[in-house]
Image 1 (cartoon, helix red, strand yellow):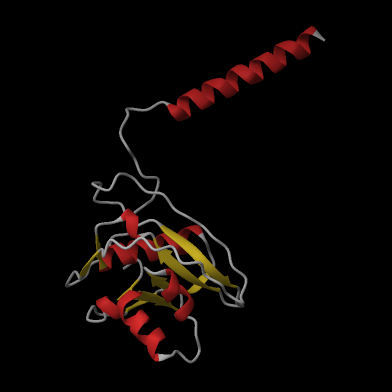
Image 2 (tube, rainbow, N blue to C red):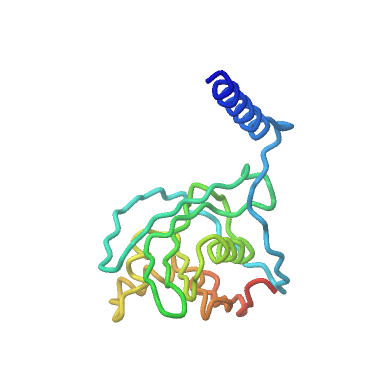
Length: 185
């Protein structure tokens, strides 16, 4: 019985040491995300409109929600926080709609969008198709088979990029002049 108590005590001490080691550090804000380097001829940027509307979204497909966190905004390796608002399973990979958190960035570039897509693909496989938007209403409109004029106007302003076949990034809306890029190249 005494041996059991010592073993339990040792387990508690080891656990506390591990927790203490995980919590201690040099005080710097580090991101646990690995950035993917992308060579791009031009960088397209989009200033945040500052709107913080949080419109509820509805979808007939199965949905899941995942929110990321990143390091301090001044860290050049960070990218916008996002939520996966829709995930439709498929035989070759899933289709997801990714909603960017406008409060997590002050400007947006094609490199930021590539980093978001790389993070989604790495953290939540298998992803075959992904649509990245920065507005909750656009998150619904991007999957509409026959979009209305209102949907098209919304998408022209808030639909930013899509991932095709799990690797090809096709930029849209404000980034439509950005050439097609390959994820991870």
